[in-house]
Length: 323
Image (cartoon, rainbow, N blue to C red; front, top):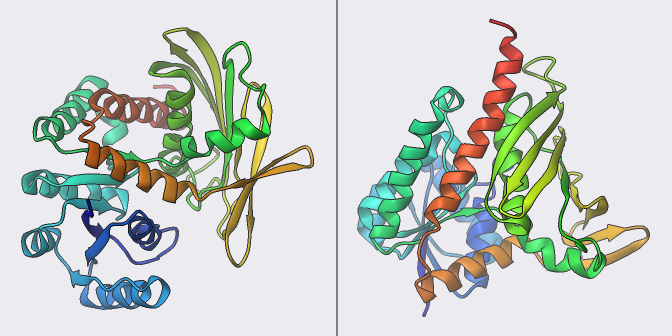
């Protein structure tokens, strides 16, 4: 079964991944039929880029509703800036299409100040509506796709259970925006290795100003089998390839990228393992789940949003100081 796909935000600006997501869907055997940009100029640029780099010939639109109405794709990939996710999700739900949404599900300036109960209710209502419609809504978090490679590199890392998960990432943003950009990756690794859980006792250092490019965050992750220590080190880096890696129980693996072909590997202690493109793996898995009719993981999406709210809220409380 070949799915038809529309992409919102297919132009490569700053760290935009829309073009790579379009390529990954084509690699997975889908047909990328249309894309949405913010202007006729950006649409033309994105269409030319997809055609030249990947041979993808997609129709261009400046409105998501117009794409969905004209082309009726099976899937919408939301790769636009986070502040634009909520309206795109609502439009996709109304059109009854499956959605792969870049992380986080949505985020706006006031989200961290929203009560946890309200955010949980809103997320559950949205995700539940996709589930009720028989449509798959999924976050594009790719780091869990690296676990098979990591386990070849560190076959004994998880012996006795996962007691700590640490991660180093290098977003292009600064201040609390780094947490919005990067924390969903750590949260996805925690969910993949430990299952659902609760974030407790958040500690943050490095919030010296809105332009701070160095931030360290840690917390306890309480899950069904016990508790684990979680830590996220953020170091701003403006240009790819950006330093990144993670450790389970202290066994570190660094992502290495070979340019210009962008071939990836995980490396540790002088050893390395070739790393298949995690984006390709994520998209292929999403397509397989859509075809198989796997329902939306409502509670997984709820937890991701709620945990992110807890982490960013802790950072904003720290910045505000005593009241």
